Length: 193
Image (cartoon, rainbow, N blue to C red; front, side, top):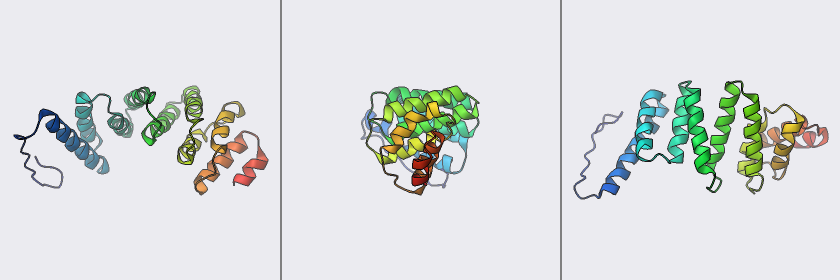
């Protein structure tokens, strides 16, 4: 098998179980997709990710990556399907960065499509789902996602989530202050800035 660096790798599968072979093939496909993504060869990367998802349709990370690749190709409806599927699969999983960035990407796609109501709904779902999480990093990602909310009614639950944590860096402090400003709390906003 040759890859983009013109290397030839010999794969001796005679002594491996079918499960081991499938895992190695999946790993190779994911690595090839990653290489193609860095080269912005979106269609080829999508082909590898499609093959991964054909054999492991519930692979959350592969869904996330394919959603990104599809978004880069401006196939927004297909990308949205991948992110929705990712979030469906994540409903019973512990919260992690893959889930959070799936929400974030869905927010961006909804805004790109002009679907402000869907964007607001997704932000509220995030605030509800992440509201009990005690992780400043995740709260910071939520703040970045919520910052384009432009009305007090929708931003209030989001502000509550990001105020539960001390900002980890200046960007988080900025987004926190911006959300507080949108919510109408000028005093807290100035303190955050």
